[in-house]
Amino acid sequence: MSLLNYLRQFFDDPAYRSGYDGIWTRLLEHCEYSLIALVIAAAIALPLAILSGHSGRGDGVISMVAVIGRAMPSLGLLVLLAVELQISLTVTMIPLVLLGIPPILLYTHAGIRAVDPAAVDAARGLGMTPWQTVHQVEIPAALPLILAGLRGAAVQIVATATLAAVVSFGGLGRYIIDGLYQFDYAQVVGGAVLVALLSLATLLVFWILDRLLVSPGLRTR
Amino acid sequence: MIAASVFDLPSYVQSSFLGLIVTQLEVSLGATLAGLVISLPIGQLCSRLPKFYPPVLGLVTVIYSIPSIALFVLLIDITGETETTVFIPLTLYTLAILVPGVVDGIRSVPPNVLDAANGMGYGRVRRYLTVELPIALPTLMAAVRVAAVSSLSLMSIGATIGSYGGFGDLFILGLRVFDSRLIWLGLISLLVLSVLCDLLLRWVQRLLTPWARTLRSVG
Image 1 (cartoon, each protein chain N blue to C red):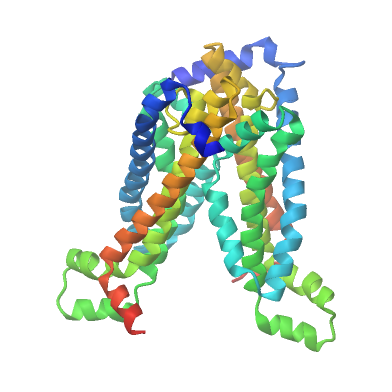
Image 2: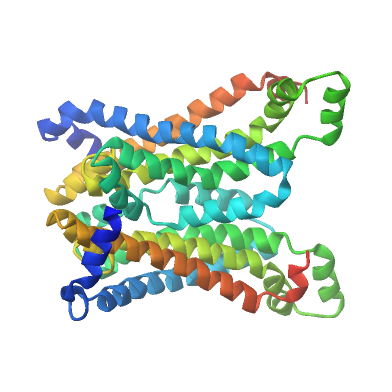
């Protein structure tokens, strides 16, 4: 397997052990970009979707946003903003945030909408305020789908954060882009494998969160 | 303003614009079609034997979560810098959309309809082709449309490994020569092409489900 040879060559190279081009530096950069983008996307999309799901309005708008999200060419948006505005990290974060919003909106809205109306009625009958109903009944019951939406957003963001390297920033994509330019295929393979592993790790984190946070009562179904 | 400036683009883009459209359509629609051919038997299997569905769904979700740029560059070693290198990952990604589409479609066939077909002496193949597939078609086609549009846009990332990103090539070129008109041209062309493909697939769906039209005009 020649890919394995390239991989060994990459991990044996002391240049990637530490410092500016070290794996840990690049990994941290990648996680930093992704986390910031995910937090901003969630801060925008979660309240909107909880509100729209709770009030039962906006089905049409949300499904339209979901289609736009699927069709959005992230690379195009990334380079467009870099050329039109400026090459800065803040500008690079914009497409990452935009990419994260549709899955969170779609799943959270659908999750809140799908909460058993009898449970919401019961909460109201118990004298809960609308805020308490949302907070103590609707959100916990919709949590599996809310987490699925956040997972979808996180996976998209981690994948696209790789492209930050195209517009000169760091992250694991740096290895892929630099490797392609330098005809250093070991570096390309190393970067690609690290990015793929990070994506799988993201899935795993959300799987664990699901196990920890979702009420066991919801799992039996 | 943008529309006007598209016409005074560098000549090397003007002459290859048609080529970009062809590559774009060939690779992304080809991948969607290949994905459909793979998804139909997998979906059929999963709806026959439901215990296979969760692991299959898990597998296609995991594949979908691998960044496209990673798959592209890893494939360079095997298939070189060719269209195939972009085609294979795109095909794999459509499975995450198409397999659930096929399964949901087949599950939407009412059991009594299947019983009726059996009672009329339909064989398995005939029942599949003339009863199950047509009833599953609206759900299936919805998934095909999503898969086609997302392949069109995902393909642009292929531009990072050479010149197989369709309109994505214009993104990288635009960045390299620092000319946003090229990027605008790529984005707008991609948008127009996506809308046209979606309309085309809606039209195909209408042709394939003539009964849906009658129902709509009556009801």
